[in-house]
Length: 209
Image 1 (tube, one colour):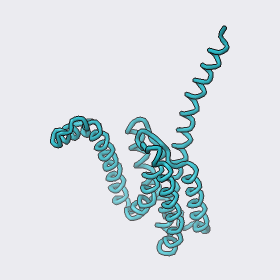
Image 2 (cartoon, one colour):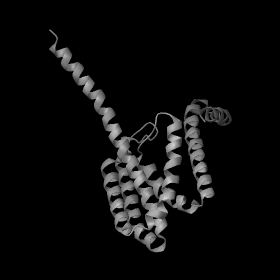
Image 3 (tube, one colour):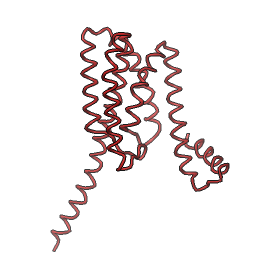
Image 4 (cartoon, helix red, strand yellow):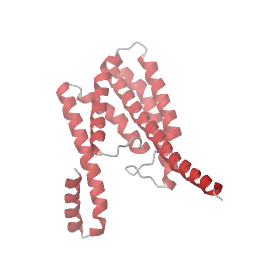
């Protein structure tokens, strides 16, 4: 995928006469090709197993929060592809049995409220794959909270029209917020380790005669 993106970026930079932007083109095209590969694979699998509309509802609730809040990212493409393929397919399969649970409407609203709390406390998660300038981070947080609120109020209407879609929407919201929380915890841990190491080095240097 990287090689394909680099080749396409080289041609695009030559065609636009902006050779200095080739690295940027390669990054954007790599993200685009990777996303298309994952989404097409998921849609094909769900079309075969008969839950295409369910996974599309899942995507409708997952993607907006994921794009705004960031979250978990892997260092290599392989685990990213596997997780990004397995999670939506698994959620689409789980939606139908979850819809039959007796207290699922209460559980759905509870899960959506928990997602709103996670988004309001942790978003946006900053990562090289999700760079957000400091001045725009409060705006991203506000928009993400508005999206989470909208999803919270859409769930009862979905529950009334189609409980399976409501379950899929809840799982999409939860998946995005859990990714946000996981990415936030990892980011905080990564920032803490270098600061602790530099503090230890500083203390050691001060203790030397």
